[in-house]
Length: 242
Image (cartoon, rainbow, N blue to C red; front, top):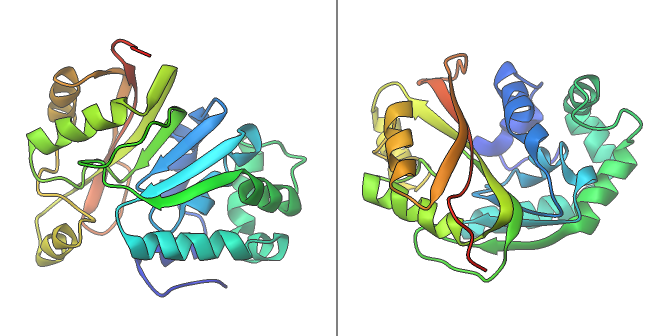
């Protein structure tokens, strides 16, 4: 098992209902040629199991250099045996729910992720910029790592610059139940935020941004420590300017 003994090790545990929801509500909707996993952490390769076979190019962006280093290593050593050992139940779930082709093998998935990964790089969605445009941007437990409404809207507007015509943002915002000492520690690490927006506030902030919501759904079946609600959404540009 390839593991770094950290928060991200949960992907090596048997697939949970929460991860199934993410694959069903977010990953299954990935379309287009160029994909960006924004805030990929150390597990971008895991989510890519559900979409890499359908796309042509994948970039992974994250704020933390240690996450970039760890993910780069994970992808560099990825092979069919590791997929079989670590993610067999996830791959079976993806096949059974028609998220990926049932004929895909572990070798196919490993080669797909390795060959299609282009950049694994540092990026701050509050300040960084790039000229790249993407067909789908994934933001899984990412955009909520801000402390104010102004920062959230700034993040949305910066993300809007990465979207092309007919492109989309697929997002999961995880809401904590109580602000604990651990929550504040995660805030300091930039892995959580003080804003903790509910669905109504998320809708208000999108209205104030350059992105419009296509759909938004609150799910209260998360069942994680201090987390019981997730907000799933899809958004696109209000207007496209080349």
